[in-house]
Length: 151
Image 1 (cartoon, rainbow, N blue to C red):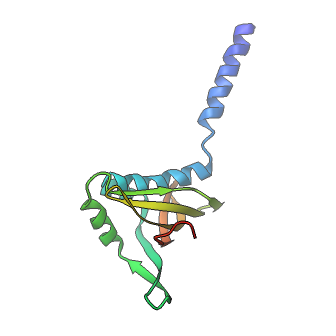
Image 2: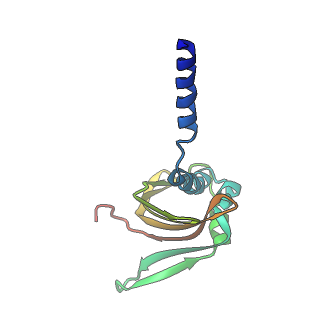
């Protein structure tokens, strides 16, 4: 009987560990695929994190301090990453807020971007993800960019 109790406890602990991945964790996995693909110049991994037709935008400020939205073509982003050497495009992200409603997720993630080993800029990424065929995919990414992270 003692062996049965020990075996049951081990099985229960293993099952709890296996099921411990939350929906939030699965969203983080997709976003981390993006950054792993960037860091490793792996365009296949990078593209696997996105839907077929994602939207990429940046909130920018011109010389007159006017705010505007800059849109980037996904294919240009993929080409830029593919042209890098491993380790050159290193974005380090923190997951601050994740909200999920069925097949829709929103992520607010401050980041620091390092290019060729040197700090380049920082800001916040705002992601919109959609669960398609039981996998999270990034549909929309808009970010801010600053040189001074202490603002």
